[in-house]
Amino acid sequence: MIKISVIIPCYNLGQYLQGCLDGILQQNIDDVEYIFINDGSTDDTLQSLTEFCKNRSNCKLINQLNAGVSAARNRAMECARGEYIYLLDGDDILTEDAVASMIAAVKDSTCDAVLSEVTILKDGIEKRVHLPIVDGTYSPKQIYEEVTIFPLMPQLLYKTEIIRNQNLKFDTQLKYGEVYDFTIRFFCFAKHIKVVSQCFFKYVMRSESATHAPNYKKDLTILDTLRKYNRVGVQFYEIPSFKLTAFKMIMSFTYNKYVKLRLKDKEAIDNIQRLLEDSILRDLTKEIMQLSSAPLKDRFLALYVYITGLSGYKFLTKLR
Image (cartoon, rainbow, N blue to C red; front, top):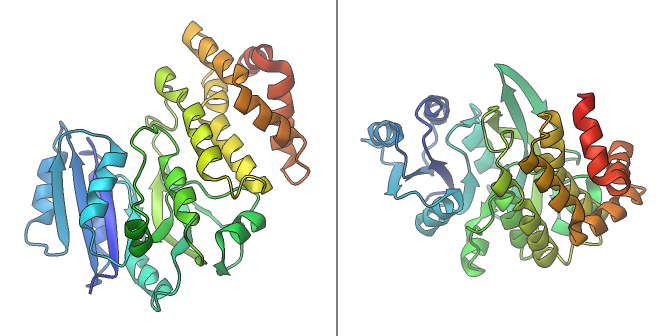
């Protein structure tokens, strides 16, 4: 019986793939399968994956034309045989005892998902990010009530039965925040979420990744993501952490990133202006600055963004 299906979408990861493959070789667990999806890579990714999967019965390789990470994950989920599904990017690394820890966490199959910790690996330095909630089993609502901000990286195990029964898929129209969107929709049907203070994977932070590099047209689609969150997460919206998580994500993909890079060209200014003029974001920002449970720095940022607008953005880019 396959307990865990690890889904690994890959696109032009030739020079970053080896760490992921080495991490898989460390597992030594039988009841797990690894599903690689080569999403139309133009480098040697497909060759590396083909060689790795050869003669490994627990590895499946799907090769498709480039369709994006969400479409790749959806295709893999269709053929996943595991009782639980875990998402791993092809440039990230499973910890040495990751799969054994996953299987231990879902041994009795009573939980619908498992939320774990994560280690960030940047410039050869590892930093463990601890969960802001103690180990235990919670309802989705209880988790939002316990945390200040929900962890946004893909660090959950999802029960396949719920995904199949509710026909849950990744939204291929979202460019950012698609994993969290999937998680919100999953939580609408889940009842028992297990929280464990173990770390299943290392998130390799690369400066050239989409999270850190500007893409003006793509960055602004984070507003579409915000609207989707509001629509599908209506049962959680009144919980402060749900609002603050959405606000933090918006700021990280636009305002904060652009300030950090001192972006003052016309496209950057136009993007920030459209962001600041968006009615839904302004309403959210107003709520955050009045949210007593939010960290002071986030309330201050919301206040600053709401009051100073574009002039405040231009001022911050000059300071850095």
